[in-house]
Image (cartoon, rainbow, N blue to C red; front, side, top):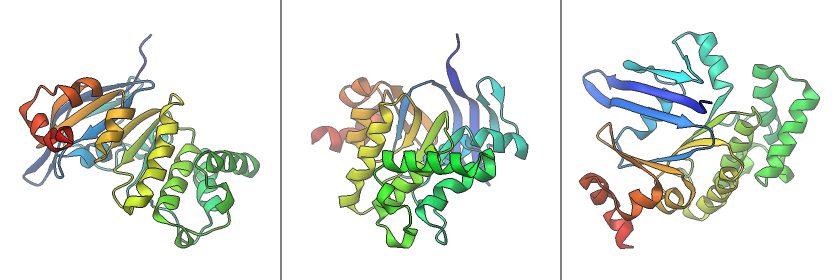
Length: 246
């Protein structure tokens, strides 16, 4: 039985004459924790935005469970209900409470009852340690708390895949750990995750597979035990040299 969830075939993305992604091929299987690392400008976040159809690829195809996701809004909406995304800037609604933020999408997109939406919200807010803050608004929360709410909100949709776009990059250093700990717990649940991150220790310890991107290409794709201890590509070695020296 094929357990491939997402397939990306020959994907490229250009902004004008600037080619940001070049001939990307990735198959993502159920339960994989894929961390994508690389220097700023290597195309990591653009790749994630293309996977979620927030950006339209210039060439190539994206498949979800064998079905191509075309540029038809109805298909994209159905796809996004199964492939959630956590952004670096949280994207919470400032005029809503924590609870309302978590209930909104399930009510509007999945059309579930208010009672079920409430139960899901409470369950996942407990999971990320934010249940005591259900009546707070985003401006009353720290950055780490906002990101944990954003993760809970995505989980309320019961996604098959969860994408994370540098989820700790907007946080103060002391708040990074609380978000990474939530993600480490999630990684033990069997949820398929694709994570763009600069947190090398997290990628080494949590991912089942690490992808190093360089200038829009996938330069190396290997288990973390191989990529971090014995990278094959010279650019990977150069990128990881400071981390490896430490």
